[in-house]
Image: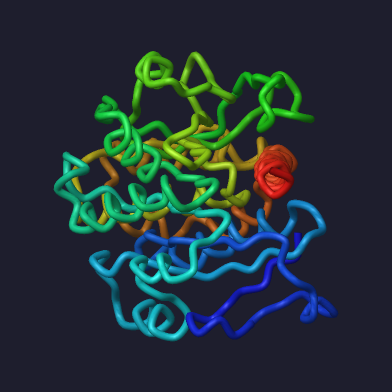
Length: 329
């Protein structure tokens, strides 16, 4: 898939060489709700997956919800390259991706952008052929479409975990029956609640619950992704660094969770030693300054990368087939 990023005014701003004249096979609205510290990385991760999923051209316009708090640098980027989500209605896309976001309130309905989320997903269910909703946005969809509330976990679920795949589902085509995927979240929705609401669970784990589920909502094929196939090799380590820094700097008192399998095997022992010191009697910022996070992150492995690319390829192939069948009618 050749991704072309489009300005709010629909002017191409980034294209793969030699593809400027190609007509898009699909159009995608990408809604980035991540906080400033992860905003750019999240854009890159999702768009890289789209770019690696096939050979057709896809035009992507970027949007964000105005009520998500922003600092100066990200606000300037949004002003230049992003549009508010209300603008999606002016040119309905074939696909919608909504990222996760930083949970601030215990209840989703109390998040500052909740009304925007309700408007976006409700409208999209009638006008967008397929949606892929990540993490908190997936939980929001379950509340909006199905009246299912998320549940707070006793502790953060973070790490890389084994998963089972329903290879008979179009999203599971070409995947091995057993895979691994990252998770990073503080809430969940039980698998049985999804099944009762009519979702097919495509990827799941007894240990950490479901990763990917799907069902038709109104006129849209809705893909819920509770895991994080888009993560790059060092994403979990960067999250741990952020959480640990907040802890040692006494910005928060909840103990950080060490993500399972977030580094290369040879680096795990040293990271565990650091973690024990942090949560023991050495709540000292100097511990983090002395640890080579960049070097360790550069050595982290990426065993779920092909899984993620296959998952996104399957999604795009499926929506293209649906579109072709619709055109034939």
